[in-house]
Structure formats: structure tokens, C-alpha cells
Amino acid sequence: LHELVTELENSSEYRQRRQAIRAFNRYSPVLKKGLALTPVKFGISFNVVHFNQAGALVHVYTDGSILVNHGGTEMGQGLHTKVAQVVAQTLGVSLSRVRATATVTDKVANTSATAASTGADLNGKAAADAAGQIRARLAEFAARSYGGEAADVTFDNDTVSVNGHSIDFTELVQQAYYARVQLWSDGFYATPKLHWDKDTLTGRPFFYYAYGAAVSEVIIDTLTGEWKLLRADLLHDAGNSINPAIDMGQVEGAFIQGMGWLTLEELCWNEDGKLLTHAPSTYKIPAVNDCPAVLHTRLFHNPNHEDTILRSKAVGEPPILLSFAVFFAIRDAIASLAEY
Image (cartoon, rainbow, N blue to C red; front, side):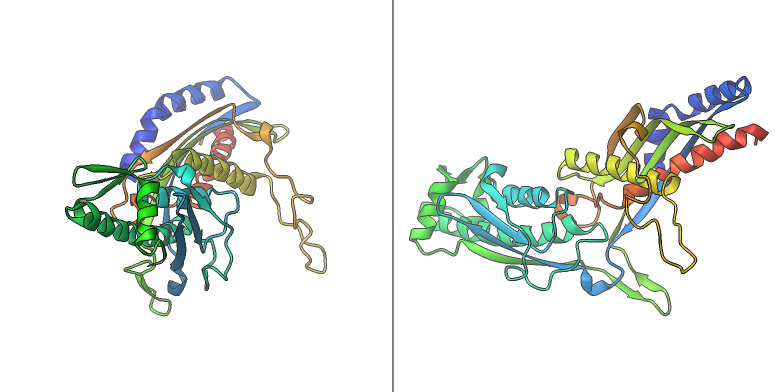
């Protein structure tokens, strides 16, 4: 976390901007600027230990196409894409060959909730397990057919290399089918090392931690209370990111969502205790014009020391907390009235 914060402090020019904002506020009686840097440390795993499991089913067809079904729910976060990438990488084929189908419990039963930012961690590992079993069978078949050792067979770029021979993946699959090699498999994953006693508050509730930090600069009209986010610099630890484009989108979306929670959304009840602000139709959510004109987002490359899928880290809920930088920047701007 210290390395990440130091990197963001330097790349965002935090110290220099702090001095510039102090100078601005000194000569601006009404409009005040504020700046804040806030860190994030977020534990990844379900607190209910038995939820930390997932299953997957992978089929390889004789035309070389691949189908994967897993226990996670795709809700726009890119989970299907990441799981498909994992299967493609495991079998050494292009992503276009792999199709992820909608989650349904007659394919993969007893699914855990897609929550706690564990979707890719759990289901990606389960899919890798299933695809890895198929790869092992194909490697053994290739070694028997062309000589050499199964451990020396490589899968890369839609090609299988064995004992000096290069065979198209589809061709090897067809040969394996004729030889009655099983071309489908189920996979399973259970997060290790987790144990938690809620009575004594002892144990290890999280498999690992995701880190991040944000710097936000705001300007506020101290007469009306109107404010605007001028610039945000975000740096988030995604481990060895499976898909940087998806992860950066998740970071930015979570940041803006969190900003809405902290600054726009208010819980209001009537006299009977009924929640009145229960949907976006009854409270304001951030829109395009609420996004900063300057938004710098980067991923902090920090391969996970734990054995997660491709050494990646969760990117879902953790970056929501980056938005505290906006809250504290507003507070900093208001405090400048009294030169705190």
C-alpha cells in the first residue's frame, strides 16, 4: 500500500497542487478548492466460509469451438469475458473460439452468490480446473500419437506442438474424438486458508487484500454549496490483471458510483418509517456532467502473492471506496474558510 500511495502522490503531483490550491484559496473569497488523497485496503472473500466455492463445465467440440458454463452471474462487469479468457489461455486458443453461456443451475448446481467481488476469482479458477483437465487428456493423447512426453506438449496460438510436430488445435480435437478421448470436464474450486470464528473474532476471513488510492480536486461555491469535481487520479491494485480494459472500466464506474453515494444520495423516510428514496427515480445519481474533466486511471501492477486466477485481484467493490477522496476534498475546501 505504501508503494502504491507514493506512486500516486508523485504521478498526481499532489504536493505541488496542494501548494497551488492554498494560493488560490488565499485570494478567492467565495470559490474554494479542496484536495484529498485517500487509500483503500479491501479484504477479498465471503465472510461465510462455505460460500467461497464454485463450479464450472467446459465442452470442446469437434469443430474446435469451446463452451463454458460457470456459477457466476454476468451483470455487465465482464465476468463471462474474463472466464472465457481463462479457458482460452488454458487451452492455448484464441478467445473467439470460446463462448460463455448464461448461468443456470441445471448445468452448474449449488452456485454461490456473485458477490463480495469474488466472481472472477471463484469461477475463473473452476473454469481453469475444467479446461486444465481437458488439456491434460489432449496432451496425453498427443504424446501417445506422436511420441514424446505429455509434459512437453505445448498449446499456443491455436496450435499444439508435440515431439517436433505442429498440429492445428481443431485437428487434434477431431483425432481425439475418433480415439474416444473425453472432450468435456467439470471443474471445482474452493478458496483455501479461510477460517473465521465470529465469536472470538479470530482466524483469517480474507484470502488476500486489494489496494488502491485516489486523489480528488474539487471546487465549491461557499455561498450556494454547489461543487464540482475538477480532477481525479485513480490508482488501483488489480494484481496481474486478466483484462485491463474491463478492470479500468470497473474502477472508474465504481469511483463515480461511490461519489454519488457520498454526495448526492440521501435516505429519507416518511412518518411511518417507509423509505421514500428507494430508487433512482426518487434520488439523483451521478451523470456524465458530474464526471471530472480530467480523469487519470491506472492499474498498479502487483501480481498476487496468493494463488488466484492468473495472479489477478478482484476489481468490483474495492474501488468504490476510492470516492472518499471526493468527500474529503469537499471537506478540505470548506475547511479552507477557517484556514484549518
